[in-house]
Image 1 (cartoon, rainbow, N blue to C red):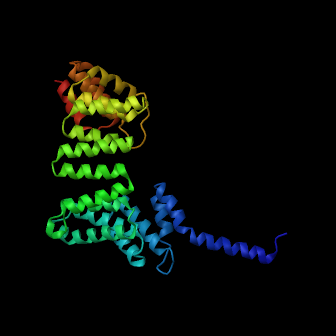
Image 2: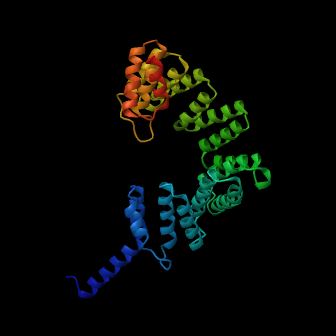
Length: 318
């Protein structure tokens, strides 16, 4: 039998739990992209609330996702002011400064540069395992002039620190630095070590070969991935794409793209529209203009924004 005192105790615990879980509820809404519901809940938190800093942080994440960067800056600055001991608050504040700087005039960029550098360096000091902040610092060190703190040596030092935390990501970071330095042989070695450490990074090496127009290496690389895992649909698509771009192994490329079209792509994977466009490019290279035209039309029906498909359709319609 529940006594009156025990019932009041349960109500008290329930009330405390509801208060303490406010940002947790908002976090779940945010992760489900229910931004307006999350904002409504978070804005009920006032400055005296112990969850105020976390609420401002998630309001900043929502604003950032919605490309409202000035608002995001305000929210992240409030989060840092309320609690300057959380690495992620500084990390996302730095990311916001960097995003704003990307579209700003040179004067404003100069004003934001030391702020983003300080934010990321603080994030790393608070949490040395925060790889994202180290990667952001690498980009800063590579792009900023030396008088503002830019330094290739500092960038490489961050990459080596990342390698201690995640071998594959460390090799990728070093590879990216070597690409920036136009040391392509060294970059390739790093990317090969990256894939050796983690095959999930196969696209990074493939894209490196694509950017260097080394299509034969790109195809061979993705063929190895398919050999390891015949159900690797991303690698299957990439073989078709390389074939379409290079004109090499057209029959193999066609077969791969047709296989990909039987698969339902996940979020962030190549679309069926893209696969149809690449298949059209292969048919165009085979001089099958009528078939290419059908496929370009199918691609544009699925995604009217595909520039290459529009250009291809114009070519085969002449």
